[in-house]
Image 1 (cartoon, rainbow, N blue to C red):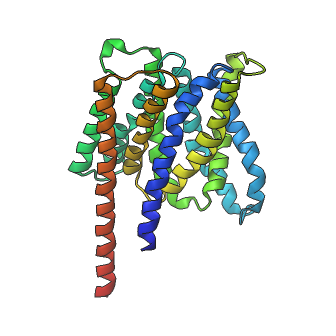
Image 2: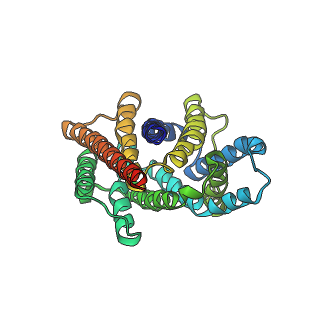
Image 3: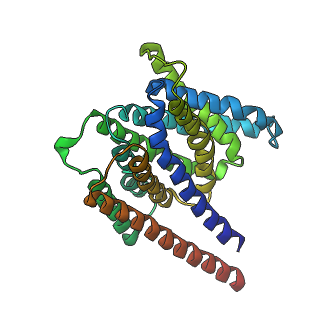
Length: 308
């Protein structure tokens, strides 16, 4: 029962994180009116680390060797996280929040492929069909035609590739993470490295004082998208596989489109709304499929214990 509740709670938390990240696309558009993409990415992770790190002194075992291992463990996912958000944020200077939200979610195709091809994880036929359905929905929402892609779309596609590796990497090491708060804090430290290095060679101007909506957008990215949502991702991937998590992350795209429609005036066509519905269907389908597989596994384990 506890395992089931834990799994259900992870599903709910990931859906909530999708909503936070969905509004994050709009928040990024707001924040870009006050600072450049590199400055924004570096600042959100530096401040995330500075704000949360003092609380780690109250986390059990902070001075132990275990926390040093967590700090080292966060290097790769942290650097990948910094890279993907630099590409995503920079891309939003040239493309719309709606298109960015949906191109980013192409990792639903990449994650099962990586797990199947390189990690030996089996992806079932129904899961693959849901991936195809989600991909088709993404194509509709982006009005996919090769000639219509711009530099911002290509940067966002690169962001999706980085996100794929980050999700898979986090899934493989999740069993070693005994403190999600500490790991997310250390991940923020490493995520700030890449944009900071790039700022040495690429100078950006900051509008000061920033417009009110730009300040609000940055605060949302700092507290919501960086501290809360990534913490949820780390917690949830201790229970949910990378393939399932990647499809649940799809929910950020319909949220992004919805918020962009109401707040940025980005109007969607009928086919684009159809694409959003297909993505929601694929996300719900994979949740039900994964839950059924989890219950079957629990029943099998229980039967084996009783037989002993």
